Length: 178
Image 1 (cartoon, helix red, strand yellow):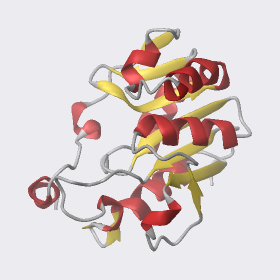
Image 2 (image 1 turned 45 degrees about the vertical axis):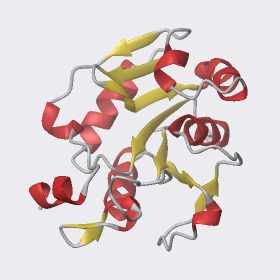
Image 3 (image 1 turned 90 degrees about the horizontal axis):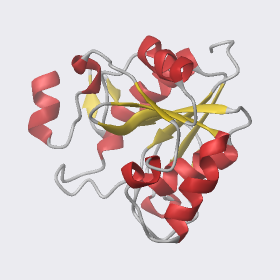
């Protein structure tokens, strides 16, 4: 585990409609996407949370924190993870970004003001506790796009190697990585 005071939030939820099965349990290089992301967060953070829906019944080798909402949105997981975090900054990694590295996550954390995001979207990203009120307002108001809540925040945009940001949405995406 890392020795930096940093929280890690793994978002394992999502309907996985285009994938056809839970992405968290898909295999890449002998480990599930969830295990892979959990490992990377462990290399970066001294505490980590996997956030999703307990009702999904995912068989994960680590505990799952239920996001406590009825909506399927990354924003719900982000809010739940940031609330649970004991540190001021949390890096947030979606389970379908299997090429992210510990060094890239650390770069996001180092750049974090209220938030630090990549040019292509709000995830993966780093979020400070100061972002929580705006994120909670967006969630309570049904504005589920994290990008919209970012408009209220002081967010740094961090350029990362595009190879780290590859997103797995379909089985073909996963096959191309394998």
